[in-house]
Image 1 (cartoon, rainbow, N blue to C red):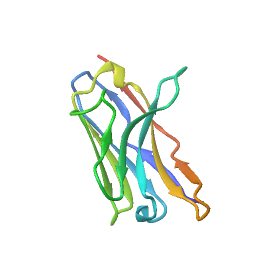
Image 2 (tube, one colour):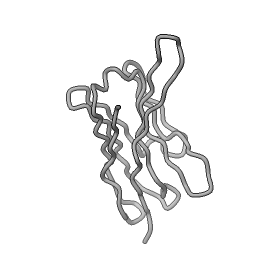
Image 3 (cartoon, helix red, strand yellow):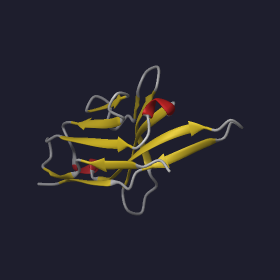
Image 4 (cartoon, helix red, strand yellow):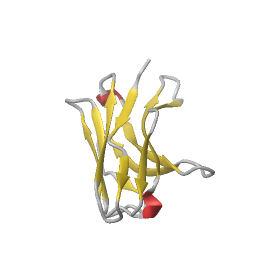
Amino acid sequence: QVQLVESGGGLVQPGGSLRLSCAVSESIFSFPIMGWYRQVPGNQRELVASIPRYGSRWYADSVQGRFTAFRDNAKNTVELQMNSLKPEDTGAYYCYGERTTPSGSKVNYWGQGTQVTVSS
């Protein structure tokens, strides 16, 4: 069973920075897409950043220019550098990886989440 383990969350003041990391128990090269979602209680998870194995990264408009996502195939990690944090960035951040089965179905794997709180 694939495991994704996030770390790096915490409490930060507005304008500050955090770097989230996601350690994956298998080669992330096997995941065509990896990325980060976040969730605020009472709301659905929203996609923050998507990192394809090849091609351009995608970011939500709300974080464009402030967040940068990385995937390191050698270390099997996915990271999210978050700068100029705002209170509305507060939430639980989840790492995910997407695979496609031989039949063409998409399967998502999730970490347990790490809490980010932006507050003065």
